[in-house]
Length: 127
Ligand SMILES: [Zn+2]
Image (cartoon, rainbow, N blue to C red; front, side, top):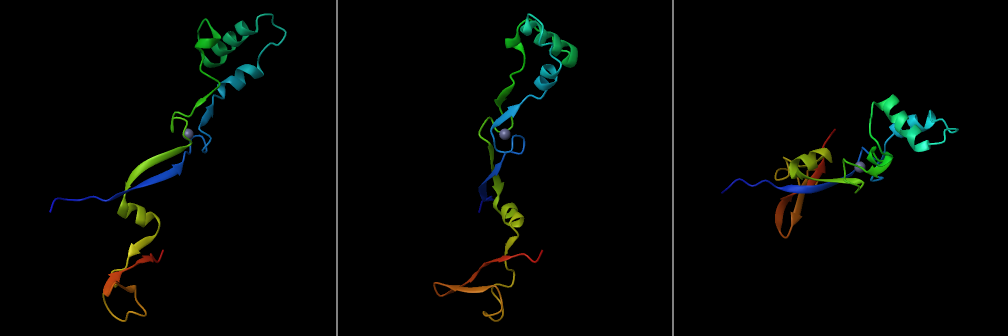
């Protein structure tokens, strides 16, 4: 028989954006905090700030990095979906097929009767 690998889909909250799907570029805060509000041309001040604090030299504010944008990690979904090996998933969930499932007293082992056949059942691992 050809080798088979069983996988399951695992969905987890994106760690990069805590499930928000958005990221905020904190570099903007530094520029805003040091902005000269009395300046006539605020846009020029913003460009100056980006040059001074982040070594960014562009001619238009529109060419600067966006303040908020879709999270690059999850592409705005807020969650990461991965295909993982079924056995790895069971291990992570601390569940395993009992190795003793087919032996001994059915009442004190991981032993189960299903449709007249002895069947291994899922048991929590002892850790
Ligand atoms: Zn994300």
